[in-house]
Length: 113
Image (cartoon, rainbow, N blue to C red):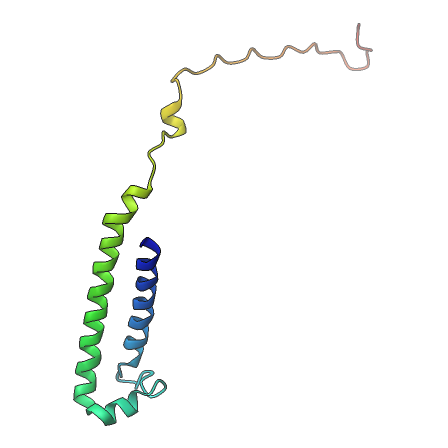
């Protein structure tokens, strides 16, 4: 069911992109490219704008509601509660290591054994 709803969500997102691009803007938009001019001839310019606006509103509402349904009902059950590394720590810090003592030799002398 989860993957079906995700598939529907992706399909609605693609439809929203197409419908928004179909709407004619001041510059003409992509309405002519996708056949928006023929749609305007069929419905009339004003009715086409109303139809695309209503379709955008409906698709956006479905997208938001479906997103909420997926997040509320499906995602909380899929998460497992595990402790983080910080929560698992014992809280004790190991003592620091003592510094390594080296014997310095004078320049030019051989090391002693």
